[in-house]
Image (cartoon, rainbow, N blue to C red; front, side, top):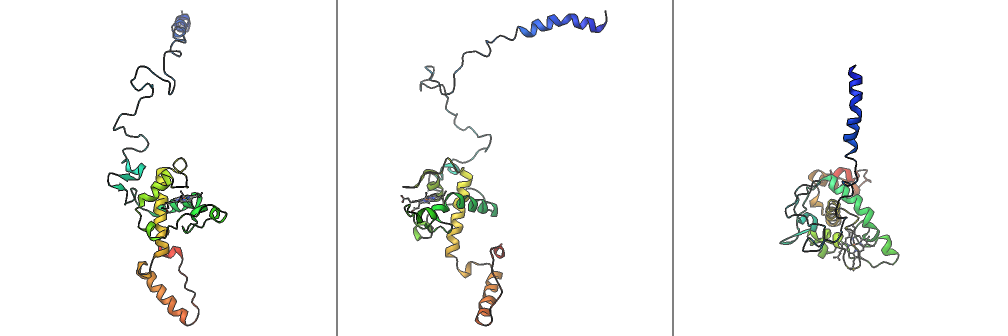
Amino acid sequence: MTPLLRRARLLPLIAALLLSGCGRNMYDQARYESYEPSSLFADGTSARPIPEGTVSRERGAIAESFFTGQDENGLLTELPIPLTQAVLERGQERYNIYCAVCHNYSGDGGGIIVQRGFVRPASFHEPRLRAAPVGYFYNAITNGFGRMYSYASRIPPEDRWAISAYIRALQLSQSATVADLPADLQARLQAASSHAQGAPSNTVLTQGDAQ
Ligand code: HEC
């Protein structure tokens, strides 16, 4: 018998073995559907709580205050992420998308929706909000504030912090003094203003100069 024929004679045996595993009882086994009630557990639900200390696969171990904006001492006073140019740019982009319609691009509270009749929020430049901890802004985005609804379902925590950091930058932009500028920009400003007293100057300070 050729090896091929010998193998062919085994085929019915292999088929019988394979087919015997094809019953539907594995598929139809007893199980709970999502959120199905259960009398097995004291709380009456089949959904089990996440064990304490569980670490997220996507994010790793992150302090709860990153999500809530507060710890045992109250609202966070420090940004819980490193402050970088990229974070501020992301914050600016998200702020302009989600917040500027009411709070305005400058943060003064006179956005287009307010111009059309919506209640005017306080300016971010008033002393009370300039003194507020950064967690205050995170908290307002997360939980809403008075007549402003929560943005928790639309803006993930990382972006809420980026927006909060950008609001800080907006606040600084409206209250910075010449002394806050880097030395070289201060010198250029001085040169520009002394020029301005004589002939018109073509020295222009742009955003790019500040980097
Ligand atoms: C639809 C308009 C609207 C949008 C969009 C909006 N807000 Fe507001 N926000 C308000 C109003 C109105 C208030 C004041 C609510 C009140 O006093 O009842 C407010 C209040 C706040 C406050 C508290 C100010 C205070 O007086 O203490 C913060 C902080 C804030 N908003 C941040 C944001 C941020 C950040 C975004 C974007 C993610 C945003 N808001 C989007 C309308 C808006």
